[in-house]
Length: 487
Image 1 (cartoon, rainbow, N blue to C red):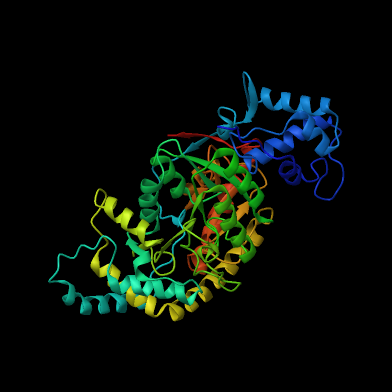
Image 2 (cartoon, rainbow, N blue to C red):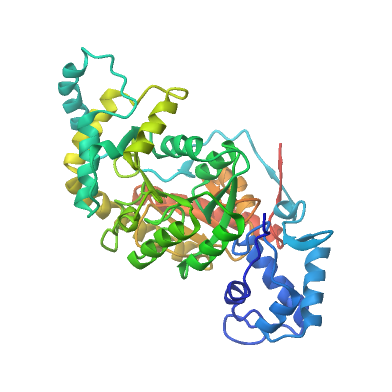
């Protein structure tokens, strides 16, 4: 297997004006090699330089940055000494995080006996819409027609598969019911596909950051996630995806091009066409997660990636959970009928089908989706504005990066204390998802995800709690983050 090597152009682009402050003035008079090492360390912690890749050769990086090779040699030496590069005999040094890097700093004692209520900000899910009760009422009325059968449909009820196929047709993607399998949510759909398409040791490309449960599903399957950075300022690095696919011979990729979780970014139609082209060129199958596809708050809904496919290179999974209600555990796979049949044949080892009542309720909701989603969009826009306003008021030094849709903000912190903040926040009434949950091997300590799925009063209370936790933490932690000791 060819080692994955980070491109010079990618690294130099992310380094930017690494010797200057934000106002353009030169930083301290430290030697260039020390400043460059610090800049690369920051990119590693932010997930922009993935762990396990090899940095460019000293000669290539020296040329790319217009520096002497001696400067680059010294930079790499500092990174090795600090544990950010691991050298192996006969091969390039690879990027790593030093042991304990995510737990440096002062000791923070976390109370575990706090009984006060907390605001749940670690998950992004809306309460059920008013139409939910009616949908289950309609499902109950339709249920007698199914009671004379055994009620187990490995590929799903025909009425729901037709409703899902029709939703794709409305978005410009011709789809027939035999291309649809109903699952127990998008996570279940992903697990079924991983079991069918890859084996232990296979590589799976992922965006970095990405949905944490997808990372766990990939690892549980025995495969190895290969992170490719997604940049909040620019979006998807399609050249990086192509390079990573070629260098790792990845058989599969998992991507969230529609209001990406956690960043909220949305891939352009040009990017979608290029992603499909990369999949064809590299003979890699892309699983596109459209769980957030209906949550387009600021832009028109995009064309499904599968519309740009010429064969079986794109598989789509979706879910009713984000659009309607997290408790509605109904998802689906859209693929070629031959793959649907193949997955159905192996599904019995896991489960025997999706509950009939939930399927009937989902079919009813899809029939009213336009009305329901319009109200959801208005609600999410108001709550996003409230969260942004409160962050500006109470945490002005934080840097939210709102995307054009989705359910959450991806926020850059001034210092890499995300894990310590998430551990401290429950003492101030808030549960948080730390940035490293959305990456591999400790990346994203300078980020935190905050959902705007609560009402405005609750969001303001949550920000107050987070601000108090951050204020209690900051004076004691000037380094990467704090070590956690539960007492």
